[in-house]
Length: 366
Image (tube, rainbow, N blue to C red; front, side, top):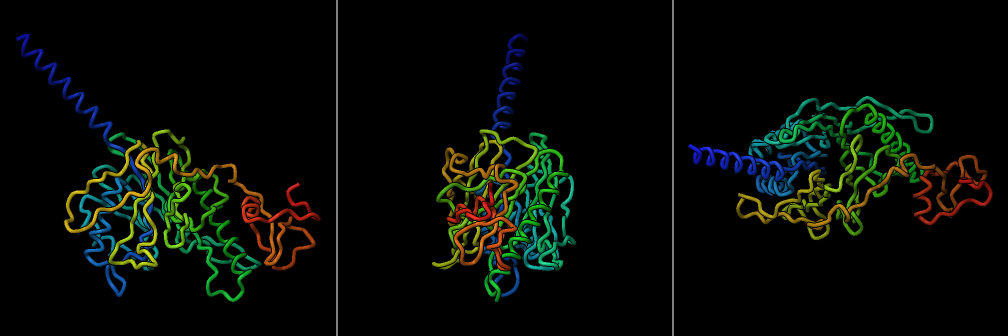
């Protein structure tokens, strides 16, 4: 009887140890990826092989949930998830366009609690006396539950205005418009985030190497790392609010380009996946299944990945705005007599980074 009791205690102890190890092995990872016009029909459709490659990359990344940009609606996601990621779920804002925002999550690990909701779909902003649509791609918000550790968190999926002026006759006006729209979009996101409770992650395509004005810190890939390889740019960020960054956080970059869709000059999809592990786990080097498809490639260092990342701090969350001109080398205050109609707004930190010096007449930062 005593022997049986010892066996029972030993078995219970082994069970407890196993459960503890299993609990420690699981981790919550969130990521973002601009898939670049993801559709499964039409001339530029993702083939079944392309979809299989994409599914393998997602599995390899270790992400439990992804914020996706540039999706061609529910039909494309339904086909992709049903055929290639059957244990996953999706939800998003199907507008009928090619650049919709979606969430994609592993249903074994996460549960959707609320949303997703599109925010700012009808918002507008003023530019040089006229009103314009603010969000061509409204922010997408949803709250999820981490089943294993019973943690709730909210994700805000964003895709901000491009800063390109390609094809515009008046380049200066286009730059001013882009800057005004971006600032208004950031203000809208700041207001949205201020209303959300609990841990919040604001992730997606910020469409700039130097995002400013955010009321929350941003995690970005470190020097020499590019989430947008075609132009060696960092456009994809993960921001956070109502939660303190922990030493266990690990930021990784996963190469997302599909060889069959890419050329020597351009990659497709053009954005790499950026994944943040809250609990310190890194993508596995082993992916089961999908024979004949090369293994995805992990770009970020396996160890100390967070030290290879940059934190865009809150020191520049409300940056001082100064003004430059098309041909000048100085930055000015808003009322400086040296400014003409072509004045271009820019943050003080960006002006300094680009080599502009303060105007000796208006002393803009005194």
